[in-house]
Image (cartoon, rainbow, N blue to C red; front, side, top):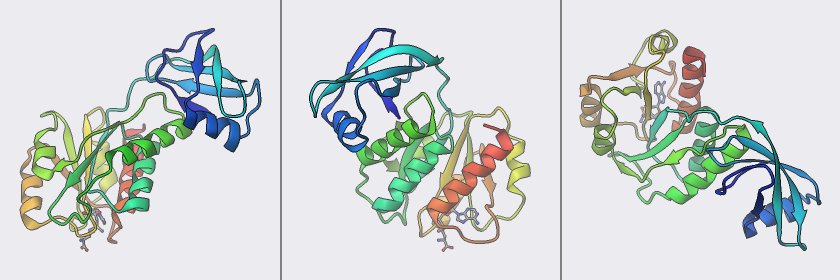
Length: 235
Ligand code: SAM
């Protein structure tokens, strides 16, 4: 089991369990005294700790030794139109597993979900980070309009626009981007309007790619695009 904690990590440190962590470790996983738990806080690398129970519902983790040095944060940004509940959970988890470092919910003309639960996205991102072995917590930004989100991108960041109307070999196009700062953009179930398409393409650093001949659901498109990026960029 791996846990994200807020506290600094060092040998001999003692981390009190929050009520939620205690419930999960002691009641759901039924960990006993001495059970190992890996910890990370986004700064001090990964540490092995052991469970010290103080009753059925409380306890702490005693920090023992470092198992991995800190690794840098992923710089990959993911702009996505929010979906409904379960599919949004899936989308946030898979994006983090596939290497996204910053999630930006974007409200587009045809976005159906307008009330974005950022805390829920962050909870899913945290769960995925704990599960997949990264040592940083992905950032989750507040939802913004498409124009504002594009405007907020750093000028040197390449925007990869996934467009079901586009044709061509995405792997070849993405392979040419090695070393660049990247942002991935995937639309809502209703796709982008013509005005939005023009605005996206007008950004000089936009690269439009196809994800194949079939129209993918937005959550499938995210996983497909991130797998292609991983194959092309290698991380
Ligand atoms: N409204 C569109 C339609 O019915 O023609 C489909 C939108 S699709 C369900 C959701 C998003 O996934 C799109 O905005 C696009 O970003 C991405 N997407 C889906 N299939 C794709 C493909 N074959 N190539 C590139 N992007 C795709």
